[in-house]
Every structure is written in C-alpha cells, then in structure tokens.
Image (cartoon, rainbow, N blue to C red; front, side, top):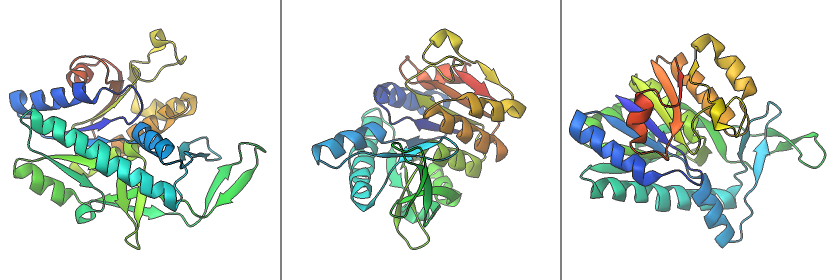
Length: 270
C-alpha cells in the first residue's frame, strides 16, 4: 500500500503524477491512495472572486491558510470542484477507476476545530487570537471506507477537507492529512510530492539536498526546515510515529515521480 500526497503549489506536475499512478496500478498491481493539496488553485480562484488570500503563522513558525467562512467557500470550490475532479478525470483517462472524495464523505476525515487560534501579527510581531478560522487537524480516518473502495477496484483521490464535531467543513493541511491516511492504512510508504527535490539544507540550493533522515533526527530536521517544508517534515514524523515504514519527500517535476521517489530520489525519512 502506497499513499501519495500531490502538492497543491504552483509547478507541481499533476499529469506526471497521474501517469505514474496509472502505471503502478496497471503494471505492478499497487494499491494507491492519492491525497492532494489545493493552495495554488485556491489562491487563483480567490483572486478571481476578489477574496483576499491570507495566511496565519503560529508562534512555533508553522504557516497555514487563514480560512474565514468566505475563504472556506472558495477553498471548497477549488479543492472539490477543480483540483479533485481534475485529478479524477486525468486518472480515468489513463484507465484508472478513480473516485473523488473529501473528508466529509462517509466521515472519511474527522478533525477538531480550535475555537481560538494564536497567530503572529505580521505588522507588530505580537500574538493575536483568531476566532473565525475554520481549519482543523485530522484526528481520525475512516480506513474501512478506503479499504472497501480499494477492494472493489477503485483508486481513492482525497481532497483536504474534513468534517468537524458539529458537522462543519474544515480546511486541513494536506500533508498531515496524508500522514493520517497512511498511518490508518498502515501503508508501507508515504510519498509527498512537491515542486522541489526534497528537503534542502540551504534552500533554494538544490545541491544541498538532504537524502536521508533517521527517525531520531526528525526533530532537528523540523527545526531547520523553512516555510511549507516544515509541515511536510512534521507530517513525515507523524506518519512514522503511526507505523509507516518510510516517508519520501520528492520532486513531482521529473518523469515517473513516484517510482523515482521509491528508488530513493528525494529525502528518505525512516
């Protein structure tokens, strides 16, 4: 079992990812669950609708999308109505019987929403409390639903939306959602594909790629990672903590990106 996270940033090659998913399913009879991000599509749609795209930075340095109710609607349209259905169409065109899902379907992803979120004010550098943010952290996965679909010959494609305690929609981080899915399914490997080679010691110098990180060195890797890569390394830590054998941070822009990652091209964490 392989769980693949397709990044949502600009430059991520969804066609290359879908081509490789199709090949692995067809030629190697691999079971694959694909989780995707939405950031670039959500930003473009927000700009078209004149909805400001804003981010929050936690006191510990993690950056996330500020998801007020208006932004949540835009994010949902981008995640489900554009990216998810687009990936499903790509896979169907390649002979894969893909099925699009989000976390509300069958209570696939359950997340907890914080009533108050602490964030750093970019103007003053001081902490402030945000109370209208509809983001959450995935706490449980309906693995039985995924196993049922996989056993029936479907390839699940999951959008990063979850259901909350009051059945509300929640924006969730795709990398950490993928980690929870991989852990719930006891996947052999979680592959996180993005628009860089992997974790770089000296970003953006690609010659500084860190090829291997031992499980006992992940905390140090999280501390040195910058920007959105910090959450990807954190997701790797969470996946390995749930029993996933290895996590690979790799580049979607090469041919056969998943198979290249499985061959060790990227940052292998185990």
